[in-house]
Each structure stands twice: as structure tokens, then as C-alpha cells.
Length: 383
Image (cartoon, rainbow, N blue to C red; front, side):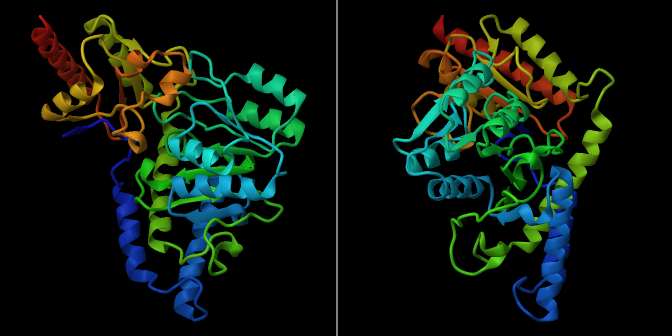
């Protein structure tokens, strides 16, 4: 199977697997236990916390270990629901991940606004600037990179606007981290990430929290993580996550070209060019915006539903997606594509191809050949 669904989950990197196996053998104690076995596990977590902090550019004590981005994002929204003024709104971009969108609806059913995005999928900074000047909200939430389209959001500019108005800013960096340098993200008040998006194990992630002030815990019980998240920490998972991130950050140092682009973008760009030529009527979603080097969101020719494309490609040995893996199976069109101004019919024709660090250029070529084959088959049944 040729795998083009890395934005949903990425296979564990050998370095992460090795780190996990070693940690399972070496750090058997509970990090909260007072004996030496527990202290060793706690020391390993502290070292990992410091490494992650150095990548993000924050203090190690700002970091909370979680089970992944969904928990981290829910924790941040849970905190806002208890920390900000009861009359204040929370603003989130219209293209946030479902776990952010649904948590916002739960905690702020009548007190949230969607920040609009342009046709490119980028948040409308002019709208945000103007609205912040009128009446600042209790918090602003804008992701770093979109999971469906790969469109990069101007989180640094959003952070600056929020700083001017002293508004807390939360950035879901789940798709950014491990694909682009994490440096600078630690300046945001809240930042979330998940290991399995960049070669770490499933079931572990983190939330970067503000350096000052109490953070309202989502999970209550023990006093782990400075009282911010109850539950025994996943030592092996954390160490495996950091091992994977170290590999990715090192690779990023070597992948920047003289013109500022990433070497991995070349394969994606070549694929997109050939796709548009081979399949008349197709379109690249977010083509005019800066995007993750690994992600192609393509509006397929007007011939058949996206699920049929996925099934036929799967039979040919290619794993692709229709968008967010967390929202698969639903019949409603993607809220991300709809927010960009596409119709429901158009949204129903979008496929997502997301490669990984180890994806070879000839696999992109093979994917295109498979798409052409599927398209011919669909066309033959129509005519």
C-alpha cells in the first residue's frame, strides 16, 4: 500500500520506536513515586520537557503532557470557559479542526464567533484587526496549518494583534510541528501538538500553557503536571515523541533551499502541475496560499463522488483521504472547504493527498497514474 494519508497519522519512526522500547525497559516506575525508580522516570520526563521547550522557545514548566491534540485542545477550551469573563466571546477561525470547533460549541454555545477566511483558506487578518479594535474577545484561536488543505495560517501576525489588545491566543500547531520548524510557537499563550503526526506514537501529545496564572485542569485527580493534568504520565510515549521530533527538526535544518523553499516541495509541485494537465476540470485548493510541503487538497473533475475515488484508489494500492480523518463518515461537506467559498457539490469532490518525510518522488508519480486510471474508469461508466 502506498500511503498518502500522513496528515491523519504518520507511521512511527524507527528512532521513536527504539526510544519507546528503551524507555519501557529502563523507566518502569511511576514518575510521582518517591523512590529512586520513580525519580528516574521523573528525571527522564524533565529532560524531555526541556528538549521540547528548546524547540518551541518557551520555559519547560510551561508544558503539560497529554494524550494528544484532541485532549490538549479540549483542555485549552475548558480553561477559557472558566478563566475568561462570563460575558466575553471566544473567536476561532472558520477552518479549525473538528475537536476545536466542537469543544468551542460545547463550552461557548452562544458566545463564539468564526473568524472568516479568504478564498485561499487564510484567515482574514483585516477582519480580525478591525473587529479587535471594536471589542476584543476573551480569547482568539487560530491554527498554524490546516489539516485538510495544508494552508499555513499567519499565526505570528495573529499573535501580534492579540498582544496589542492583551487577548490570550491559542494556536493548534498539530499539523505544523514536525513538518516545519517549531521555533517561535512557544511565544503563543497556548500551543497544542500530537506525536503521531510526525512519527511518534499515538496517544501522546502536549499543551504549552501560559507561564503565569493558573490553568484550569480538564482531568482532575492527582497533582501531576503541576496540578494541571491528573493521571500518570506516559513516560515511554513522551520520550518516543521527543525522539521523533529531534529527527524531524534535524531534517528541517538540512532541507531549506537558498530561495527559502523546502526541498520536499518540489515533488508536490511537480505532482500538482501534472495533475492539472492530466485531469481537466481539476483544481488545487488553496493554490495561492503558502501550504505545507506535504499536502495537496485537490478538487477532482466533475464526474463522481469522492468516496468512490477513495475506494477505487484503495483497490489500486493507494491510501488517500477526503479531508479530516476525525470527520470521516459524515455526510455533510467539509466545513473547511465551505468556509473557503466552495459549494457543497464542489466540496464533495475534494480529495486530500498528504505525504511523509519518507515518501519517494516516484510514489507521487505512481499516485498520478492511479488517479488517471480511476478517472478513465469513471468516465467509461458515464459514457
